[in-house]
Length: 82
Image (cartoon, rainbow, N blue to C red; front, top):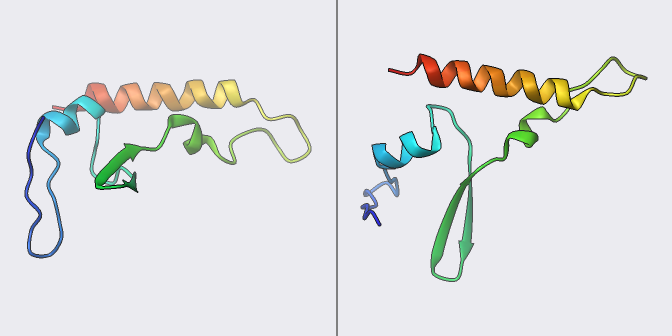
């Protein structure tokens, strides 16, 4: 368990080990939820990024192909990281 400090502006820094483990890059959106005295930060699931993906209007969307393309791009970004 890691301990972090809240700055005077209410900001926190996510430790590098956690960012690397979850592949959190600059611009990654997180969801914040308060449960009692706990703060839960979670990454949006990959399928949410596919909203609106699919075929031309009036045709059945090919979500599996769109998801496969998204995962390929994600792997390429991960491989390109230093």
